[in-house]
Amino acid sequence: MTWVRVATTAAVPLGEMLGVSVNGFKLAIYHLDDDSFRATQNVCTHEFALLSDGWLEGSEVECPLHAGRFDVRTGRALCEPLKRDIAVFAVEVRDGEIFVALPQ
Ligand code: FES
Image (cartoon, rainbow, N blue to C red; front, side, top):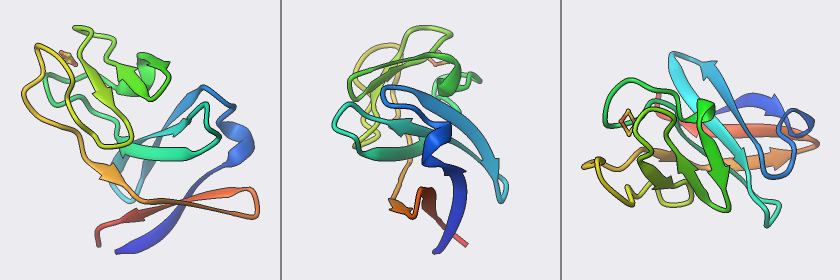
């Protein structure tokens, strides 16, 4: 596992999300209402859509293509048409920078 810098905290305002590509991973970075930052894979597990193009409500992200919803804290798929969860990654904030733990 490697900690990789993905964005500044300023780039992800409260209640918003940001799609980034790092080390071959497409990630969605979320800034939740409780002021925590979270990271998941950005590609939906149903078909090809980027979750960061959808909507973040509380701790749930809604896919822009068929409205599947995931809990971004656990990666859990919450409704049809989703069958598979998304991957979640550990996040740390250091001096205004967001780091995500990625597999090597
Ligand atoms: S592509 Fe995400 S719900 Fe279908």
